[in-house]
Amino acid sequence: MGLVGFALLGAHAQAAEPPKIAVVATGGTIAMKLDPTTHAPVPALSGEDLVSAVPKLKDIATIKVTEFSNVPSDYMGPDRWPALSRKIDEILADPEIRGAIVLHGTDTLDQTAYFLDLTLKSEKPVVLVGAQRNASDWDADGSRNLLNAARQILADGSTGAGVTVTLNHHINAAREVRKTHTSNVETFNSGDAGFLGYVDEDRVIFSRKSLRRQTLPLPERMPRVDLVSMYAGADGSQVRHAAATGAEAIVVEAYGWGNMNAEMHDAIVDVIAKGVPVIVATKVYNGRALPVYGFKGGGNTLLKAGAVFADDLTPDKARILTLIALPASKDRAALQALFDK
Image (cartoon, rainbow, N blue to C red; front, side):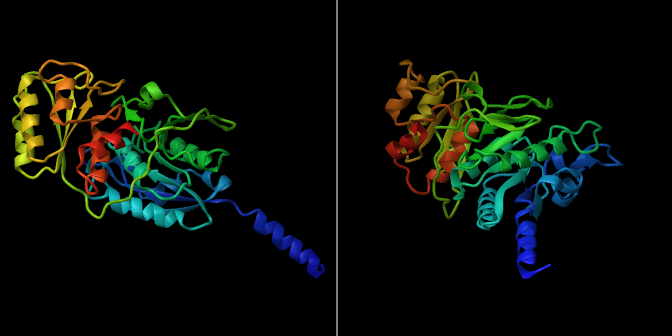
């Protein structure tokens, strides 16, 4: 074989190399097995273990695994999110990496996804997956979710869609997704907004893109932002306690359009007067927090007191947006503009 033949053969071999996908393991049920003593699920598997358990992955991609952590997702929060965001951006800076799959527990998966969607600089696809059933279950769902995430990353149309959560074949935008069932594999959906697409047997179908995405600079520090719930008979003491003990902002999980009783109203007025921003979100599954009602504690009176309204963000996600935005400004108008975006 001549030099030209060898060159063509080498070019063909190079072209045939499978695409590269990063897998970032953080833990969660997907990485758990039953402890032989307690017979309860505990962290047991590494990212490499989980990838090895899905041989079909090797048919479509070369997988590069990063072991970020192996903790229940209940342990994930502002102390870990910035480092995870920086690590994923570092990984995606490699031009050969097509995208990243983040293995994560489902309890806070939607929160981590939204934090990453707000702070990641790369436009490469990032797909968060988990499992509702641990790896010891005969019908564990983690392997299929992992394979579907890889297929999604390699599909046409995946770039520029933002961070997504893909379980049980459904693709959800990070801003809109929420967990809706404690144990069923059909747990994540996007409420009024609807799914972005579906990973089917033969191809990945994208139906839409989220129109409300935004990105913000990752702050140097994570402020303390407390989340307080409105409940029947609430006296406002939790709001006052949060402000008195160092909360730099408070998110209130309110009723309906953003309503609460007179005692909570008075507490919010007091803490806003002391310079602590208050963000009003709704605990209702669908719809938006809006300043409509004019009774004391109604949304309109809270607006006049200086509260910020979280639009359709869940209370958890309203807190995340506040965490990232607050170090830059506590100005009410600036914060409201971010929630309205």
